[in-house]
Length: 270
Image (cartoon, rainbow, N blue to C red; front, side, top):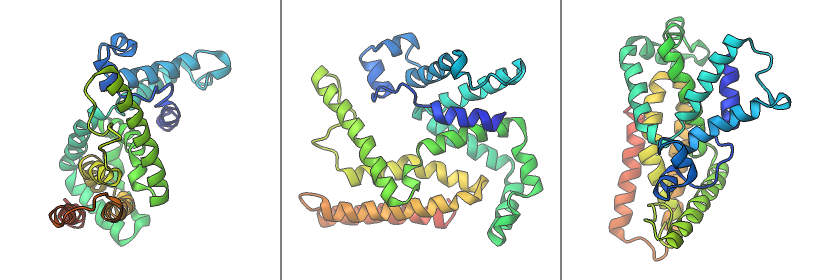
């Protein structure tokens, strides 16, 4: 049930997205912000659309479920999709960190076994930990949210395509913000945003803090961390060569220092 709910949530977690973020919807008193009282208007809408579609007989992907099964699956879908609001991101980091601290002995042992032989993961004790009701709920939400922000953990060719698409969406919103005379959000001004620089910041401040704690719980994600660090270095190289005018020596030193600190955090395990 959980796996099916997660797959359906993954397919529908952005359905009907208008290409504008929650802050913009709230700032402009958009109908979605009014309908959902400024609380995750997009994510609430995605959830509602999923179940509106499923209420049509030809679209009912839940038709084979018993009533209790459907209620359980619906609850998981709602929780997982609402958690994809980036406003929940740092609360999720704290939750994963807490899960690790409460079970650190078991999870550290599981990670050691994984490092010696990946086939040994997860240990029976780690599975028992993951099966606790609160852990299961958190892992489901974590899988969807991590996948949602995973472009910087993919091979660079894919990472760059996604970054360009996302930035263009931000810039179109920025154009609208200028037209409407509302504040232009930080990454939305196409005249001012340095694309490679913005991606280093996205990885440094948003993705890496989550991945750093996830590795302690799910060591196979180390491969994603390695790719993310590699992508950060590639963005760094592009920033050095494509920025006009070229960065000053002081700016180069500051950026090199940021990259080195980021890599060190993963090498040292936090």
